[in-house]
Length: 109
Image (cartoon, rainbow, N blue to C red; front, top):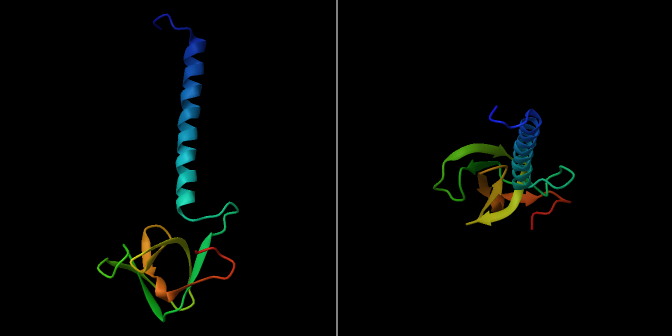
C-alpha cells in the first residue's frame, strides 16, 4: 500500500476516529449549554406561567407565529435572554415575560 506501514495506517485511523468522536461530543456539550442547564442538569432559569393561557412564539414579538400555548401555572425552562418584552424559553421559543414568574430558587436575572 504505497510503502506506508500497516501500523501507521491503523494509528492514523484510530486518531481520526477519536477526533470525530470528540468533535461530536463537544457539539452536544455546546447545545446543552445553550439550553440553560446548570452543571447538575437543573435549569438555571425556570419560570411559571401567570396568565390563563400564554402564547409561545417562534420569535420575540407578537408578529411571530404562535407555536404552542401554555396554561396557567405551567412551568418551563427558560434563559435570562429577554428581547422586546419576550423571554426565550426551551430552544428558540419565546413568551411574553410579563406573564412569566421565575420559580423560587432559580436564576433568571
